Length: 275
Image (cartoon, rainbow, N blue to C red; front, side, top):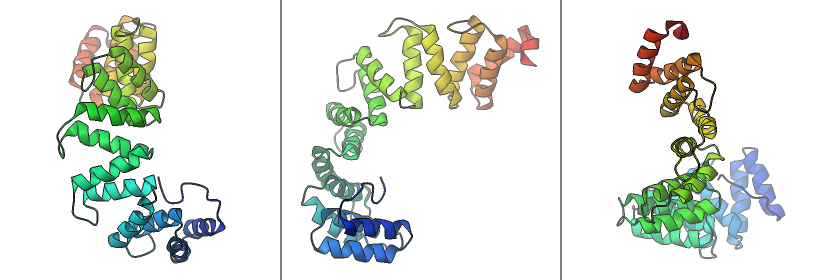
């Protein structure tokens, strides 16, 4: 989310927003600084943002952190998240995962979706803390319930593979479907595969073809390969060797070897389909 992501009721913040939008960054800074010194939390967060990113004013991480901490003390989730991110990445401060986790936890408890997602990633990867899949599930679930698409997909994978939770393909299906409806490519592919294989749902080639088509249109080579097979066999779609050729060719152009092998066979047996 960028600067001034909400509509502010107070005139001073609206003035700052307008100045910033018009490229009058120094003017925006002056307005925000005046309000920030008077204790306006939103002004403190946005002033911190300007200092952190240095757009139109000199970048100053120390000043960004100063104003974020002012707002964070008043339980502003965005400021808490931003501080956590600075500590996680070493942005203007010495990298400190312990500090990052503390601030992310504060932000997540204040309903920050970004903080919840980052916590999920940190605990899932375990490259900065002890790996803890159950904690990853906890925080991904919070973010997913607030419609974070990546978290929805991640939960689908964890339920399908049984990482941090009891394996439950039906629940995996639910999360894949939510993410797929938000046009998330990998979720579209995985959802299609569940329909194709009849896992957690009744096998449905028509729905499988629908979701594979979505993924294939985004350039997913595995989806293109499977669609080619479905068109060759007439599974969920009308049998059509020309369409099989089309999808395999697209995947082969991206060095997908199984598609290239299928093309070689198709063009040898039915050369008319490959013209």
